[in-house]
Length: 338
Ligand SMILES: C[S@@+](CC[C@H](N)C(=O)[O-])C[C@H]1O[C@@H](n2cnc3c(N)ncnc32)[C@H](O)[C@@H]1O
Image 1 (cartoon, rainbow, N blue to C red):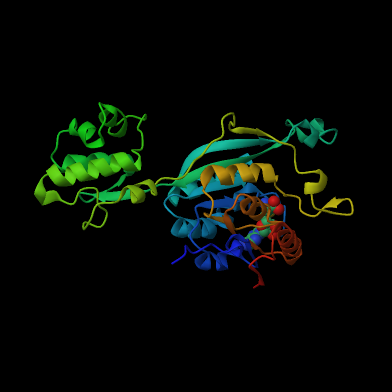
Image 2 (spheres, rainbow, N blue to C red):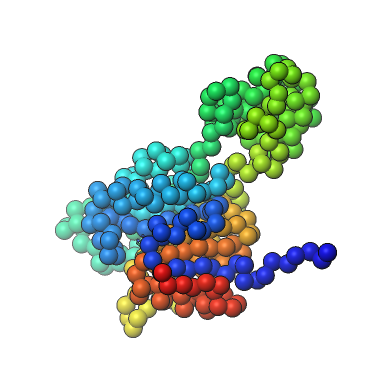
């Protein structure tokens, strides 16, 4: 049989008019979630007036993301610094592990001449943050639920084999004991091939009564591919740091109605392209729960990822729909009204 070709329409962004909370259950599980929701600045109808309302605002969304995200998922959480600080405990409670905080520096032009520091009583703010989280994955071993580093070690210990044999199992001189089984912060995630070596060795030579080793269902060991898919993806270009100097969107990229911006929060495609490519591969699913003008969907489509977006305000949804229709080679597969 000839190989089945993916239809080009598979990649078309899916945009829905309505509350994202009502759509998460029907979207495919995501590798990437880009959250650009409430800021606590009354930025759009429903955005609380201060950061104090943000934890309650985000709570149902974070619960749904945690339930549906793949173990390899990355969440990029955009906000003000105090907004993010307020929501951070909620994200942790729901199993999101903090990785890094990125500062979007829009530059002095963002406030040029408009910030009266005598009235403001603080330095002008020209930044937002984009904070990277990954899933905290816990696996069971000997009745305990453990993070991957501890689980790997516990499973080997359960086999009764001396630790030095991990080197032989992985076909290395001492890298396994030094890197994959260290208990310090310099732990390395074993690649699939090394994991497969550990699995084969432990299940062939470990205590028969404890087999299978490196299993999550107690019936068969994990494959190298399954092991690799428990970790968030990350591909980084050389020279990119956690400070992103990029002006606010302007010129032809900015959507305007006469002289006014259509949406006050339109994000630069350059930054969205960066985070999507860093944390996913072509064909992976990206979620954009708070669409606005659906800049995430545009960037995801450009990078060959599948994107699912929702926008609750009909006016923004209409602009986003026509934007997506233009960026796609054919009209989006499904631009539906809820
Ligand atoms: C900060 S803006 C996003 C801007 C977007 N990143 C862009 O580049 O255009 C947040 C958007 O989320 C929408 N929104 C708020 N709550 C929502 C919900 N529960 N479901 C879907 N959209 C929502 C708002 O109407 C607003 O347009």
